[in-house]
Image (cartoon, rainbow, N blue to C red):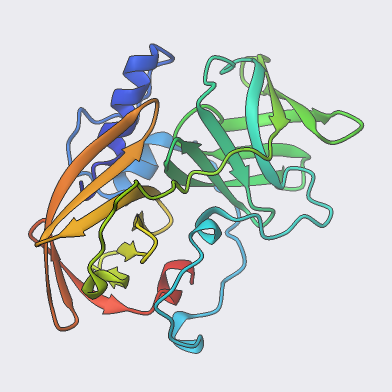
Amino acid sequence: MKRLSIRFFCAALAALSVFSLTACNNGEESKTKETAAATTAPSTEIPTAATTTAASDLPYTDTLDMSKVFTVKNTTDQPFAGTWQITDGVGSELEHFAYCFDGDGKAYLMVGTMGFVGTYSDNYQNTGVFLCQLMYGINGTYTYQFADDKKSVVLTDTENQKTTTLTKTDAFNPVPKAKDGYETDSALFGAWADGNGGYLYFDKSGVMLDYQKDFSFTFYSYSAKDGSIEQTYAMTEETTETAAYKVEGDTLTYNKLEYKKVSANEILS
């Protein structure tokens, strides 16, 4: 389960029989966040978003609004801010994909309950060019033209002049609902960190988050009992897995990996 996001993502793409994905690594779990990012992004760089408040400066909390993992932060004079789907042109067959631009330089590719984090600029190097670095679908430099109502935009790839039409959607939400009859263990509740940018968050509502900081996230509906978690995620269809766990004080052992209890603020900082 831990760090298998790329493998699941590539498997789903293979099932969809769409474009080749150079970032797929045949399921190798040893690839690091930096390696994966380097193999998928153009060589150009996007200015980083403004630094957020450090977790140490925020009040400790055990609870997390999971929708804020991929939230839109700024819509003022930001026509790209929001969630979009490809409705025409290159990538129009990717009906299960959604793209969220947060208005502050972060981009999210979301499929089912899984997402990947990238970056974007709608005025790259003051040239009026849209530059987006994401795992798949929209990854490159584009000129763009919005419709008058700002609810659709045509991107034109600067390399091959092929077009992609994006249309705004309000319907996409990757956070699932809990399964009927789910059970929880209060010892799991809250946020846990592995010290390497990996986080788990267990909500009492029967939904959990596996988050690789600024790289990927997966939401699961879960049920926990007797040291075993049954967890379900979805891409083109639902998949259920099991994970062993043990909580001792402020330490969580999850599938033989060790996490320490932290404030849920750390996930969003």
